Every structure is written in structure tokens, then in C-alpha cells.
Image (cartoon, rainbow, N blue to C red; front, side, top):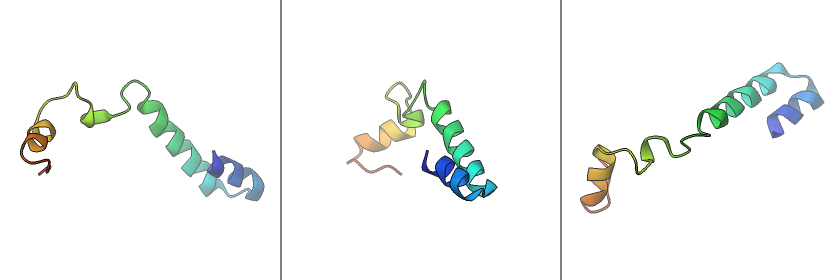
Length: 56
């Protein structure tokens, strides 16, 4: 939100692009905010956590 406001205040399109990219990332995580760290996914992350809490 801040980059969108900064774009409005300065007219700098670079800030608008940062705001759009950030918003796109937020929208992509709406259904699965934790991504590969979601408990529904199995694999290396889960196995790494079982081995002393370190992810390799």
C-alpha cells in the first residue's frame, strides 16, 4: 500500500510497479499462504525438521 501511495505522491512509475508486484504476490498466496511450508506438503522440509530442527 505504501508504494502505491508513494507513486501517487511522486508520479514515479517504479513505485507503482513495486506495488503491483507485491499485490500479485499477496493474491497468489490467498489460498495457500504458507506455500511449500504448508503442513499439507510432505518432503524434504518435513524430514529436515524431524532431524534436529535443521532444514538442509
